Image 1 (spheres, protein in one colour):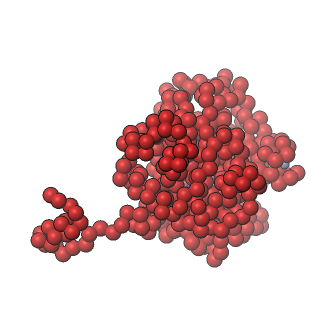
Image 2 (image 1 turned 30 degrees about the horizontal axis):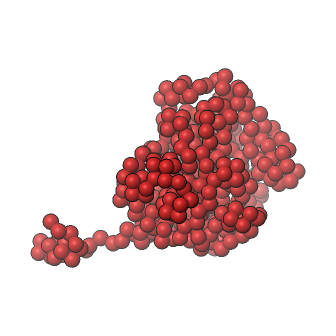
Image 3 (image 1 turned 90 degrees about the horizontal axis):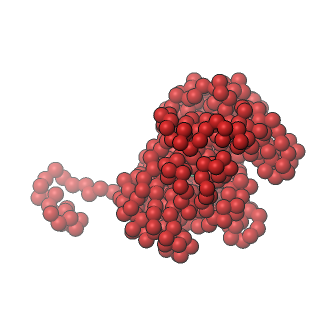
Length: 413
Ligand SMILES: *Cc1c(COP(=O)(O)O)cnc(C)c1O
Ligand SMILES: [Zn+2]
C-alpha cells in the first residue's frame, strides 16, 4: 500500500506496520489510526480526476483507502448514496441550507456496509475465510450480507433486544447467529473471547482500524457531492463512536490532501437516555458508562467502544453535542418521511432530530449550512416506524363507510 505510512496508536503514538491483521496497540491497548502519505495521494489523483470517475461506489476513492492495488473489489455496490438538498425542510427549520445524505439505501440498509465491505477485503488480504463481529444489529447484518456476497462464513453475536428486521437479515444471509441474553456490553465481551479462541477475522469496529477507513467514505462522498465546498456543520448519530470518528477522519484526509479548504464542525447527536460521550463533553471530564435507555437500538451503547476517536472528532472540529429524547427521534422520523421521502430507522433519524433541536435552541446559527446523515433504513425496525407514524384507517369495503372514515379523519374531499 504505497499510500499508507503506518497504523498509529491514538493514545501513545506508537507506530505499527499496517498489516491486514493489525488490531490495537501492543504497548497501551489504544486504538490505531491509519496514517497516509498525502503527498503521494496528491501525486496520484486530483478532485477533478476523481469527479470524472464512473465507479459509483465507495471504491472510487481507492487512493484514500488502505487496500492493496491487487485486492478484489467486492461485488455488492456500497456507497455513493443519494445526497439531497432539502429546501422545504430547511425553510421549515429556519436554516440557510440543509442537505440529507441517505445511507439507508446501501445494500443491507445502513452506513455500516461501508465498514463491512472493507472488512471483507481486509479478511481476504489476511487470508481468512471466516469473519466475526458483535453488533447492536446493523454491523452484523451488513457483515453477513457483504460476506455472503463474497462467499465467506460469518459468526455474529447480537444482544437479544436486536430488532427482528435486522435478525431476519442475518438469518437470510446465512450467518451463524448467536443471540446473547444480555446487554451489548455482554455481547461484545463474549464475541471477543470467541474471536480469540477460534482465530476468526475480527470485524469489531473499535478493534479493527480499517473499518473506520471504510466509514470515512461517507465524508469523501459528501465533499464531492458538494462540489468540494464544505458546509459549516455535519450532524451524525453516535453510539460506539466509530462512525463519527470515521466521518471526521474523511474530512481531515481530504483537507490534508488539499481537496477541501475548510473543515466542518461535527455535531454529535445521542439519545437523552444514553449519551455517555456527549456527557463527557458537557462535563469536560472523561466518559463513564451510562444506562442504555432509548428506542434507538443502534445507538443504545452505554459503554462506547471507540470513545477516543469520537471525543476527538467533536473537540478537534469545535463541534456540538446535542441529546434528543425518544419523542424527538420519532418526530424526526416523521419529518424525514413526510418532508423528504426518506424512511429512517430511529438511529438513522437521530442526527436530524439533533439538527432540529440545535436550531430551535439557538446552538446552530440560522445562516449555517448543514449536512444531516441518515445512517439506516426505516424498514429495519418496522415496530418503531409504526410507533412514529401510526396505524392506517381500517374499514369495511364500503363507500359510505369510507366517506364516514374520511370525515372522521378530517380528510375533506
Ligand atoms: C451503528 C450505527 C450508528 C452509530 O455508529 P457508531 O459507530 O456505533 O457510533 C448510527 N446509526 C445507525 C443506523 C447505526 O447502525
Ligand atoms: Zn499505544
